Amino acid sequence: MDMQTVLSNFALILFVLMVVTGVIWCLDVFVLAKQRRRAADIALREYDARIDKLAKEGIKADSGNQRAEIEAAHLRQPTWIEYSGSFFPVIALVFILRSFLWEPFKIPSSSMVPTLLVGDFILVNKYAYGIRLPIINKKVIEIADPQRGDVMVFKYPKDMSQDYIKRVIGVPGDTITYENKRLTVNGKPVQYTPMDDYLDDQHPIYHKQFLENLAGVPHRILNTADKRGFDLGAVDFVNHPEACNFSYDKFTCIVPAGNYFMMGDNRDNSADSRYWGFVPDKNIVGKAIVVWMNFGNPKRIGGIQ
Image 1 (cartoon, rainbow, N blue to C red):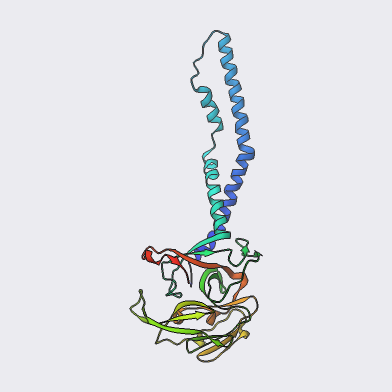
Image 2 (cartoon, rainbow, N blue to C red):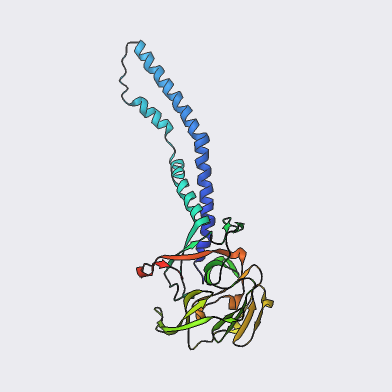
């Protein structure tokens, strides 16, 4: 599911702004401010000398606030430096929070319905699966690995400029089978409990709804009655095609080391690992943890299961 390609460039833009404003701030603190101070001191000495000379000549000068005005004028920051200095700590704070702690995303499509709806604003935990360097996304500190049932944001393997969000179905070493719209993980069928049909808000269509229990993580999924569970003709793996065996309406994949098998909860309306392959660890962005706003439906606010 595409999550606005422009967001993937935002980190780079933010980094550039932080560097530029930071350089200007440092230049002002360590160089330009001292130059302004020296210029102000020279101007004040010249002013005091004039006042003393006038006093010796018997002329009383009514300076008022002139001395303070002279000092303030010389110490005043140029506008471009003032704005840079003001923006730098804000930009730096946003960059640190967004790069290492939490990052907001907006859901633009329906592949994760009913768990996530179009228009949901979600918050992603960036450190749940390890600390990564911003921009290059290289993991430098191990914390934890994705688990089956997690809702995870990652870089789309076919286009690293796009962020996708799906549910983790298989972790490294798992054997995943999908047949008749049902999952089997490591030879154990996943449990499904029928629920009331789900009415799609965007289209007047009812979907079959089930409570899927994946590794102890219950969550709702949808099936569309008139759609096949798998389209063999749409398969176009970008990595490890040898790890899967496909037939007309069934496939079995053994998840390679360092990779994850992802699927959308809207099973018959999701382009996911069934079609383009596995998600390498290096593509991971973070774990989706909460819906913090949906302007069309504020009741959506809450944790993600």
